[in-house]
Image (tube, rainbow, N blue to C red; front, side):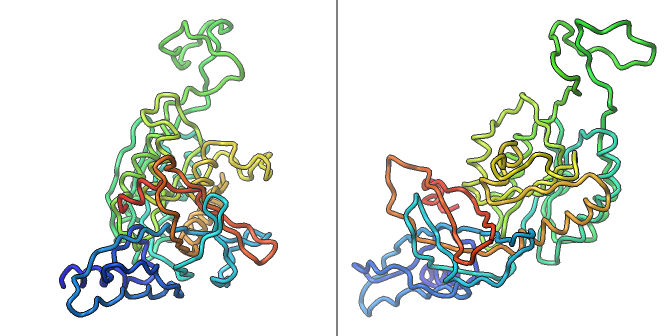
Length: 368
């Protein structure tokens, strides 16, 4: 009876991000969960008298979805009947639907090696991040360069977050570059030193030698979010210029998989330009930041001035909190296939739909 009560309690959470639900049903019952509005999941069947309930694991794939109009504004009045969900190009019935705002679990990850001009603008705007979070949200703060450094663990104390952001000092580099050693002339007094390995020639346009390990920072943030409550939306709130070194311990593919397994979405603010220069629909997803955002169901924003950044911080949290939440029953596990694609369509024309590209069955069966 205690186990049955626990299962019922878990299923009674409105809009819960339940990846693996367990229900007690009579032996021999193969009835799937009944469709409902998503605000109150269906109660498990009651065992017949004299029969011992057998726990049956029902795995649901949870799909957060963002919908915007042609002007980039959030669309919040869609109904369940206007959505269609496809797994591996096969349509699946939507068994849970929720359009209510969901509390956030967020890791704010800040690039600690920006160009001086960018660092100054971000520094002035940082405290505005706190204004985007509400009393039910929990936030952790991380700075990263070569290694991620946790400034504070998850907390719902918004005043504490504000104070921490106010005290953060963002590291920066000047605009000097390491010149091509084959062409550099005499070094003037006070000039920056030559790179350690002078024999390694630098070809092409001059660039600052970045050591920022972006993939490792995203991986670490995802690991922090992995164990947060399933009734929350888990996001990485990334502030970066998009630079990434070649020294990451966790490559893109590994990091991306870890995010999909933990149901984490990446929302990135790129601070190196105001508008997505040359970013057409055909080019979308070309950069690594875009790939993280697109494949996890997040988004990418662009801003370089203090006022723009302050506004974008609230845009990120508003969009993440107000996603639709859909759930479907996947096909029975296929040992030969672990990854399965997801596509969401809406019946109303002219809308832009964003969701994660897929899921891994192994993580679903693990109950993450």
